Length: 101
Image (cartoon, rainbow, N blue to C red; front, side, top):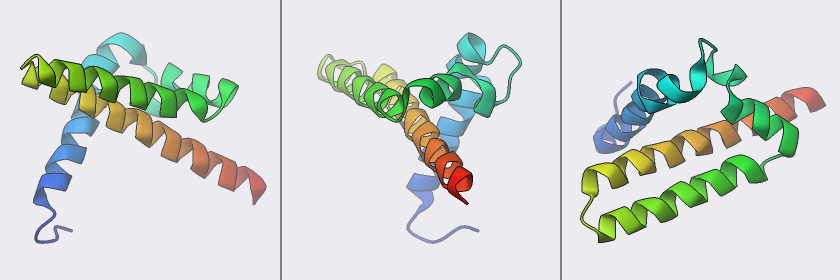
């Protein structure tokens, strides 16, 4: 369902999904596995929420540096990576909630 005024958010989240499912994330990390079985999730389960949150912070820091160097396309790609790490964190929380049910 589309909500007026949220189009940019939808486009951004769709771009993050496309990066993970068909871009750099899939090429480097998927090895034919679904998102919830890729290293982004497996490592988060092993070491805890600091992994995806730290990776998201690192990617955003890198994006700021790229932005400052006028590497805007690369900065946007790093920001999408941060969104995907935030999604991994969100999924990890969901798994923890389910385990407590």
